[in-house]
Amino acid sequence: MRSRNGNSYFSRTVQVTLLLLYSFALQADEYLISYRYLVKDTILYNETLQISKAMQKCSGYPHKYLILETRDDKNLKEIINQNNQEFIEYLHKLGLNVVHNSKTSNYQYSETTILTLKTSCFKVDFNDNSVKISALK
Amino acid sequence: MKYSLVLVALLSALSLSAEQSASNTIGTNNEIAVNEMQKKGVSSDKTCQCNDVQNVTDKSEPVLKKNNTMLISVVGQGVAPMNTASPAQAYALAKRAAVADAYRLIAEKVKGVRIDGQDLIKNMMVKRSTVRTSVSAMVRNANVVETTFKEGLCEVEMEIVISHAQFK
Image 1 (spheres, rainbow over the protein chains, first blue to last red):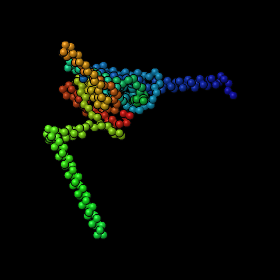
Image 2 (cartoon, rainbow over the protein chains, first blue to last red):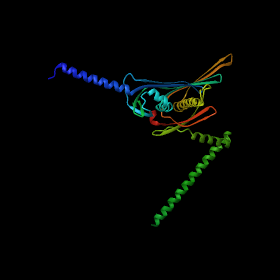
Image 3 (cartoon, chains in turn brown, green):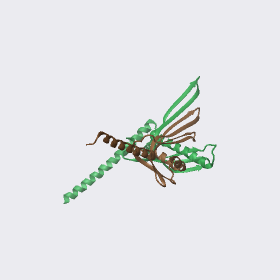
Image 4 (cartoon, rainbow over the protein chains, first blue to last red):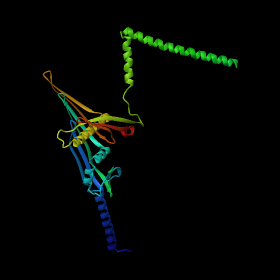
């Protein structure tokens, strides 16, 4: 029969190992991304793309992915800046919320359309020459 | 054998006479209808117009039926702003605006438009007339088919396939 001290040492080691594994996995993997732009009278304004590392583990499973080529780069913001067009087309494919309002007052027409991707979690796998970005559902 | 042949001949003669009588009754019914219309003062030309209207209503817009899919195609338009750093930037911004317009058109076609109108009349005169429209939707899996950029105007043709199951 084991002593109480021995058991506590074992369980603490397991806890620390799990915590380290969990934190390393979190740093490498998950990012929060949001995207929004406004079109007023057919002219684009305020296009914003926010990217940040996830502080908590996200729930869900990856369902749609995009593979971008890199040169051993581990900075997601820079990779997305280099492949901006491709990434934004991918975000459009994922689906955006459309809110449109138009107003005709005394026969003068004006309209505003806002497209938004609410803050969503993405799993990112860094490889030697590519990055795989998958949306979590 | 002889009797059977005679029976067949009799049956065929009967069926022929029945068909003729049916066509005669249809013809007389039509004549009666035209006569009634003429009595009411409606000319035969107008009856033709009614038939045309009926034909137009038959050619109604396609409806999404059960276990079916439907392709929706729209063309969005966007204009580049005046103060751009380069023609490439102007093209990119105009294209983004055109995509947003196409998304809006898809949302309008699929979900419909909310319309609100208001007229202010004072001393028997219209002071202000306002019409507001709004759409709110989530659009995913739309594809860009073609992009054209001519004289500062960008046009994006987009398609989306919707299925009946998505609206359950």
